[in-house]
Image (cartoon, rainbow, N blue to C red; front, side, top):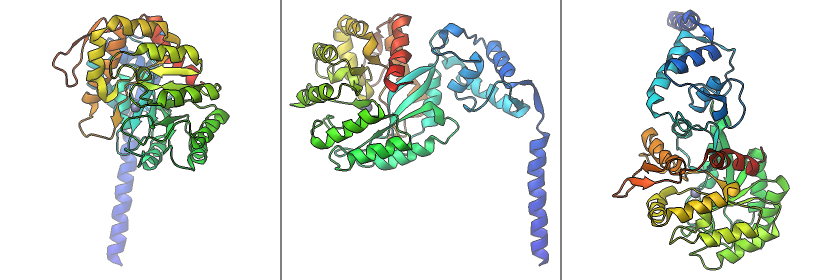
Length: 390
Ligand SMILES: [Zn+2]
């Protein structure tokens, strides 16, 4: 009995001391908005309204959210403690030298993969350094039938509840051979999916035709809820796939399709004419420029004929989306620095005339597209906005 009383007194004292510590943490004299502005400017980070891809109320508050220094729910007039202010300052200093200072803020990244145990938080922090504010994550599973995708989807739904959750644009995925695929897509949309990723048409995955009766039910759901469909589609190497997809693109003109990786036409030679033909024929078709694990192979073709590839990007600037195609959760080596360096390759390829990047190649010097700001705005924001229906 006596022991129990002492125990409860101890618990009471411990609880009160935690309470008092919190109460004693002094408030910072400025509100959050004022504090952030002073903090950034004193670190030579001076922001310009024109560099934001969408209008924001407070430039510094918006940038602090993109960098993951504060949760998305914080407001400019919020009061913060000295301790919080100090933490924000430490976190900014940790990435200060990595910040893209003359770039665009509010970029939308349209192609990254999420697997259970991957760190979206770390990805968003690395991506934030380049002004990427929101990211499409795809909960794809493993070959040959996309198994494990449901656990990845469940885990992504939990991620949406985190302080950075509103920076995630969740897409769902399916097994194309599953007779319940259409019902499942409908369920995932109700749970929050903003798009659908098909893994069929990838050489490592199940070769279920993408124009099957089963898949037509899936496209009907995409049409009903007006969600985009992203697909890998190796049309140069998988026989008959181009014809299947053409039938789908033409039978569902109301559905926006995104054929990833330049329609998978610079993976075994430069066959961009085939991609151009598809884009000309199907106005509901978009592409992305993601390079993923095949970055060394893309670099080989970029070196071979950069002018041709750049001309294609300029010609189809209204139909192109930005993304890296990194698979989170696959490897422990994908820490902040790895992610930062990998995303940097894509950003630099788009924005610079020359850049260095090395992922398994002997020569790290590359020529980039050096695209005009107006084109970059389309790739990073205006085209994603159209596709996602913002
Ligand atoms: Zn991918």
